[in-house]
Amino acid sequence: MHYEVIKGVSPQLAMTLFHGLYIDEYDWNLATLVDGIGNNWRWTFKGSARVREVLERLWLNRAWNDFSLNRKVIYHSSYYRLPTNMNGQKLLISDFDCVHERYPELFSNADSVIRMKQKALQKADLIATISQSSKEDLIRFHQIPEEKIRVVHLGVTSFFSPGKAFEKKQSRPYLVYVGSRAAYKNFKLLHGVFAHGKIRGYDLVVIGGECALAKEKLPSGGEIRWCHADDYQLREIYRGAAAFIYPSLYEGFGIPPLEALACGCPVVASDILVLHEVLGDVVEYFDPLSEDSLVDAIKQAVKNKDINATLGMEHVKQYTWERVSDEFLNIYKDLG
Image (tube, rainbow, N blue to C red; front, side, top):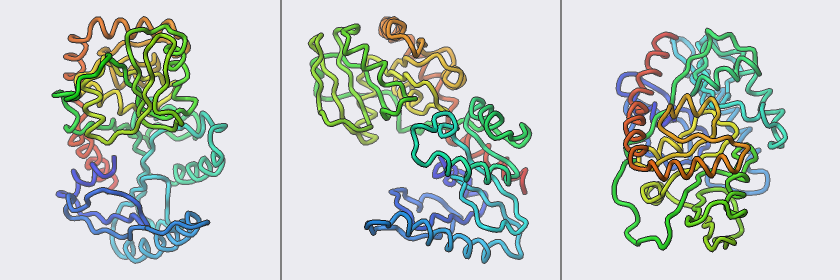
């Protein structure tokens, strides 16, 4: 998100980006009026993550003190990382979800992340979060006053668009899932539908996450294909899929189903509040605890594929990074 925001805001507002000892592939030359502070980290050894953390903290404090004295600036933290002293300057925090708070058993560092987050959120002058659902989580878990929170829905790049799918014709139609195997992603439900033979005539393409198998043969005669994909491959997969399945029990927002909609792919999504907020009435919803409900929703999505695709492509037009940049520019002006 922040890369797109910086690209959009930087022509109108001078910015200094502290990315410390970073590892990324972003082309920061696309951003104007941005000074960068950081070096690409290329060393890996036992304890290297801890060394980088300590060096970055020291570097951040020094860079911030040099930069913030005797001038009026806004500190925008992309992940709760703060200097030791704010030097009287305004603080904006970006928040994405409360997954550590909701599912602490899934993370070995949940307690430390929550403490770091709590400390940063309490200091913030404003907090920008990505959905009304995430806003309600901030109020629930961290007792943040509602007036301190701004909701800024994310965007989808125009790269994801309808068009030509795979040049090599697939032997069978397929459904697609994008995401990890974390419990709250609820992949187990989708896998069960295929493993129990409740969906026939389709393969399942699984993008992302870990799996020892490249393919998993199913009793129904189909298969589950496990793979990784870059953005170009992912776009083609979306374009060629019969439907995209999003079975999550919890999300802060939901970028993948919007990407799928942008490519003309019908979406089948969990009946949870945040997905209704983001996806509206252009997808087929199902009970995320019921295999039969998922099967019915898939059948409905495939049956209404053409109209769902048309409605979905129209719906996703509102989620632009230009709008996101404009909303952040307004937040900066309010803080300034």
